[in-house]
Structure formats: structure tokens, C-alpha cells
Length: 53
Image (cartoon, rainbow, N blue to C red; front, side, top):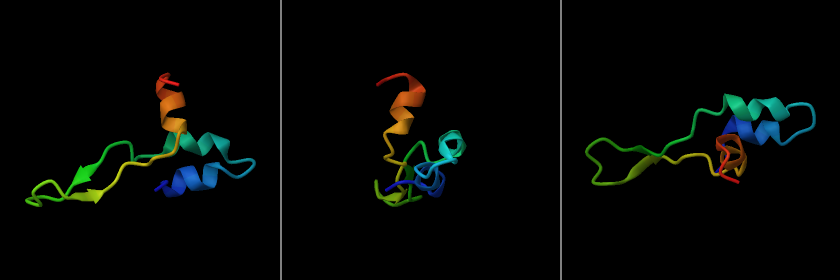
């Protein structure tokens, strides 16, 4: 699932918003035995920004 910032950044004129995305890590549910409260953004831009792709 993409973050709101990355979803908007896919629109013309808003491409620079990819850098505003804060969902770069999974956030576990406290005491949730490994359940994820908030998943990281799966937008491929994060691999490009990190220089992996």
C-alpha cells in the first residue's frame, strides 16, 4: 500500500513529494506478537531514492 505522499507524487507536478514519505519501515503493533500496525510504503520510488535500483 502506498503512502498518501507517494500516491499524490504519482500525479504530474507533485513528483518531489516522494521525499516527504515517512512510511519507510514497518511499524509493529506493541505486544502484538509480530503483527504489523502500519506497513511500510511499497512504492518503488524508495528503492530509487536509496540507490538500490
